[in-house]
Image (cartoon, rainbow, N blue to C red; front, side):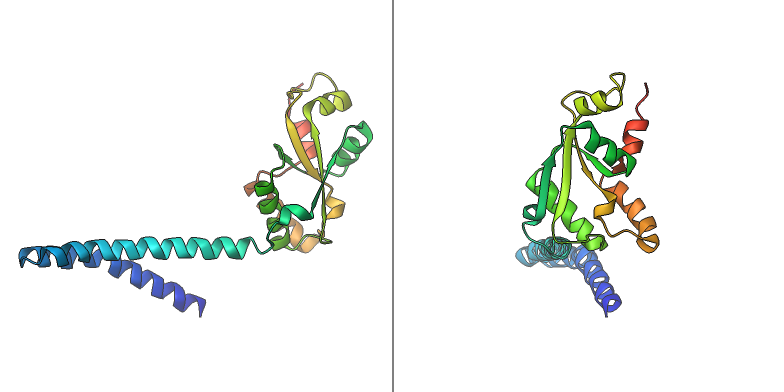
Length: 186
């Protein structure tokens, strides 16, 4: 059924794209100027409308959980022990500060991947100065550079989904914390 729907959209797009090139000039030559203009404007308006509707549907399918940021518990860390535990666990790490929009996307991605153990998610936030204090002053992080990490033990990862998850995380800017810290030249 999905394949049939996709074929329908392809055929419709071809008709709407190439139909005006045939009908428009014929109508202009036969002195039907208004019809010629409409034969060009209406199909391209339909293409724009179809594209907008498909984009909206895709976004709605992705963002299954509305206000997902309310399910994320932001835990600021300031102690080296917790940061070392995240490092030892190869925590999933993102650079930047958490915003509602970003958290909505991240939570829905994890939910769509099927790796959430529970409804809530703990997100540990810290900055570059804590990394320097914990792993050495010679690390080249800005003091105010922000990071967000998720313990892998908080996620439902196993052999069947780990490979896919490992590749998908890169699309969203996710890296392992030990790689983030280890990749910075001393």
